[in-house]
Image 1 (cartoon, rainbow, N blue to C red):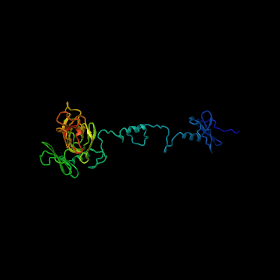
Image 2 (image 1 turned 90 degrees about the vertical axis):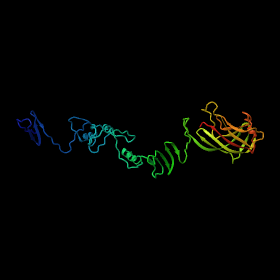
Image 3 (image 1 turned 60 degrees about the vertical axis):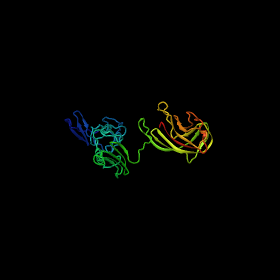
Image 4 (image 1 turned 180 degrees about the vertical axis):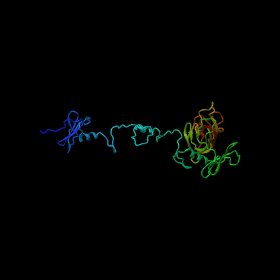
Length: 347
C-alpha cells in the first residue's frame, strides 16, 4: 500500500493534495476535503419528514414537495389559514374569511336592505313610473308639476279645482268634462249623476249609508192552505230604500187560485226589522187594497208588518182582529192588489 506524503508541520486549515484527492489539517488529523462526486451518486432515501444531516435524495425531496402547493396557481385543500389583513386593505395579500366578513359589514344586502345615514341614488327622469328608487329630488320634481289650485288628468277634463274664479271659495269636481259637484259655504251640491250610497253599512245610527232603487217579484201565499198565482205580466212591484227605511208600491194581478184560505200574505223585498227598535215600534201598517174580491169581504183592507218577516199580512174589515186569518179566502182569479207603504229593515 502506497504511503501518502503529508507536510510535517501543517497549520490548522492547510490543504494538501495527494493522488487527486484533497485533504485538510483540522489541527489534529488530515481529513478528506470537498469531495466531488461524479456520475449519478446514490444514497439511502430518508423517511418522510426526516429532519437531520442525512443526505436528502431526489426521492426524499419529491415526497416532501408533495405536501406543498406550487407558487403558481396553487390548489389548496382542507382549511388553509393565512394572516388576516387589516380592514380596508387593498393589495394582493390573501383575503381570509375574517377579512371578507369585516368588509361585508360595511355594505347592505341586496334582499331587504336597511340603509343608514343619508343614502343616495340616481334621480329618475320626470314622470318615470317604474320600480326605480325615487329620490327626494324626483319627488320634489313631481310635486312641482301639481298645480296648487287643482288636481287634474292628462287631458284636463277630470279634475278637482279650488276657486275657478278669484276668491270664489268653492271646490268643484269634474269628470269627463262635466261638473258633478260643488262644495261651498252652504254645503255640498250634487250637479250631475246623483249621490250613490251602496252598502256602506256604517255602525253610526246617524249615518245615511245606503240609497237604493229597485223592484221585486211579488209572491202571494196563503196562511192555511191553497194557492194564489199572480199574472207573470203583472207580478212586479217597486221599492226605494233609504238607509233602513223601505218604501214599497205597486199593482199586481191574480191569474189563478186553488182553494185559498187563511192569512193573505204578499212577499217583501227586504226582511222586516227585528232588533234595535224600542218597545213595539218595529211593527208597521200600510195600504193594500183588494180590488174585485169576494162580495162578503167587509170594510176596507190594509196590511201590517211584524218583526223579522219577509211578508206583509193583508187585513180585511174594520175590527182590530176581524178577518185577519181569512182574507185569502176572499181572493178570486180576477182579484188585483194595490200596494203602498213604508217599513223598516235591519240592513
